[in-house]
Image (tube, rainbow, N blue to C red; front, side, top):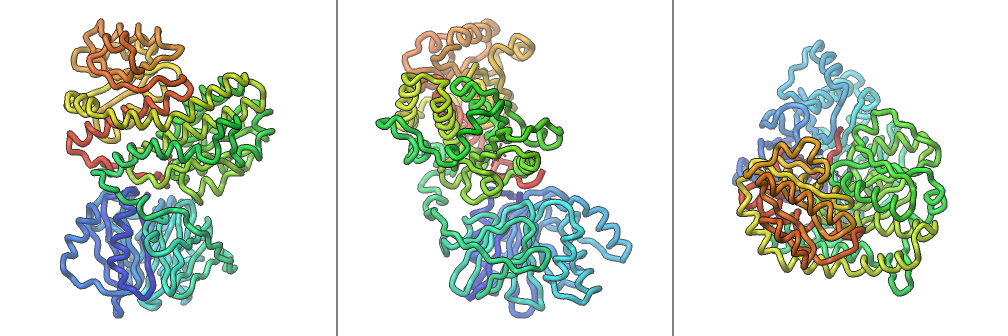
Length: 612
Ligand code: AGP
């Protein structure tokens, strides 16, 4: 899940591409590089590390040229290093290429080329594909575009490829399968990116490139073709996003900004959908398939990571309100498990980026078997959104911090509104309960804002426990998935080993871990499970465990049982996860910062996992 950027036009390309790479750095930061045509030759500049390290290595060199491609890497084939950094240059030195994805049959192609005497400078699959393309170009004496089309018919895997060549200086040739590619249309200039953020400050006119499409991009021309060499009409869409959305806005980190945005993003997610006065929820995408959902035997939720945790909360809510059986599946397992999928099964795919490869392929498999795919996605125009029959956007705005925060709470809002709508239409929820939950939803933004105004205590707790070696997170019912999410956030941001567990499961093993050195974080707000969770807290205290607890305002019982507390306003158990997760997001953030971790770009991670 690398970041790719390209520019061809009449401006100096280097500063535009470097700025674009910085905007995409959340996609991977193992190395960075650019290839630019300086009116004589292609020049390559690349360096292990972040984009800033690349800039430093270039220093005051005068990098000239009006067409350029750039890459920020998340290493798959070959460790992070200068030689494995992109762009790669072909054996002749006349073609440069960057790539996001994985070429699965690269070893076989490499053997063929080695037998032909090719020598490779890197360990990457990308350099293999590049030389394979050049081999075809030379042998067939054809254009680079033609050679690429022929080569791609022999390639298996996922890719976005950008190429520039000496003999076509202002032309960028691109191809896509499985990884995202957006082209920005300007006046006598074009921009290319893994998403729209590198081009947002220059144009709002974009084209989303589909799988098996090639783009031949010149300053004043954009040609789209399929692998059959047929021309396609580019579908230009207008971006509904402001530059401020992808800036830090005075916060130290995108993660903190995105945590503090939640009162607004939760409100934005309900706006135009939730009408408490009218007692209605309007979700056109869900309405379209309401009959199929209502009569469904089961709903299969497919997702990864934090989105999977949102799916787990949704399982509890949908079964409770809609009385429909729900199964929550890890996309990476589901896509290979050969699961039983019946025609008209409802598949709910949850994804912030809308580009997660495992989720995308899992839903494409299910679609082939006749299932109905509904997407809950944040990134507008993303692959999962386009692969779904219908669905709902979470409207959380761009999420730049690698650790997902505001997208999670927005996913919970969409899934809760969906369950309420279907439950009410199906008659499996009383009108009184329905109206009460609409009111509960409506006041979540102000309750989230209350938490944002009470974070000092959380900073102190983070300082106290920042040296901990391990953490345990426990919850029951709706808060079980929140405990899992809290543990994931801490792992991602602070590199502290943390596990989430159903609190009652402790007695079946994990309680053996408890001693005076283990912080145990409870999500223990007032709900149907409260008495049970109080006894679980007593079990931990009995073994000298250190108890940190997210509790409901005024809950003295849990406060007395805890060494440290994080308070949230009272809320119905069904909507409580939208609040209880916020102190856990902040705890992981403040511990990460206290430990000097790069909280926006945690090691070994990337924002959207576009390779399996
Ligand atoms: C969460 O903080 C992580 N970034 C990761 O687990 C993420 O949730 C997962 O990769 C799924 O991403 P998606 O929602 O974009 O599909």
